[in-house]
Length: 346
Image (spheres, rainbow, N blue to C red):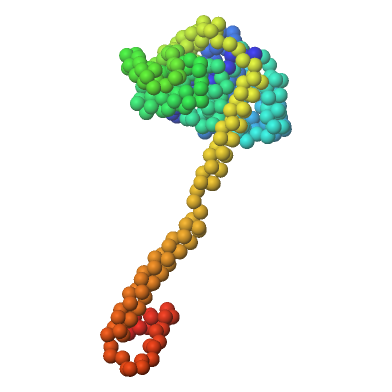
């Protein structure tokens, strides 16, 4: 049983991974056992921020080659880290055997107080599966309009899928407190008006030049600069999470993974159904082309028949007006199509 927290964002570049890593370290500093799952597919930022580049990731566990304990990065500044990388991408296409292997692997892990999932930015199926399976989501935003718009899009999708737990919001890279308050208030007002999702403020991270210095040195700012303003903000957020522990419930990891993989399976199934529906309703271009050709030929034929009829009627009238012999012989009228065309050309 662990308190599972998924940290995500609608937009990349808002500092989500940095917050995931430093918040994990802050919780560990308070005496909690913490495991950070690096589920960020795109950039593997935990590696960049720590200088650790593991050779194996979750894919080796899914295939049954290694156990989670084999790939686990143990006791990095007091926390454990699971490298996800390419294994996260495979989650959407797991067989039943691989699903069982993955769930069993997490059962063999040591017990943790906090299990932090650092997801990719955006609303991919993998990101949504982690969010929907978690009882706690932290949404990281900045005061930039694009960040707030993308955050709203994320909340809209979660509302669509029926997520009903309150989502905590951290405003990062804050230069002025009032600006952060206004940005959050604007997001809160829009969400309350149009969505079923519920959000609440968790805290802010002040803009801090030491954060950039820590990235360059590949050491988390909470460790390298414990007294800097960003570290104090992280500590305040960690304390708030600890105080609110009674309001949340721990979740067995096997239950989390079952929910996560079930969501992915349903999402994949819906995607296949839509593709099939689109395929069945898609008109056959070959048939349409043949029909179009037939219509053109039919239109031409109708026109030609009309011309033939007009020609015959005119010919009969002109013949009747001629003087005929006492015992006239009936005039032969050629009705074949080719002869009529020759007549028309003449």
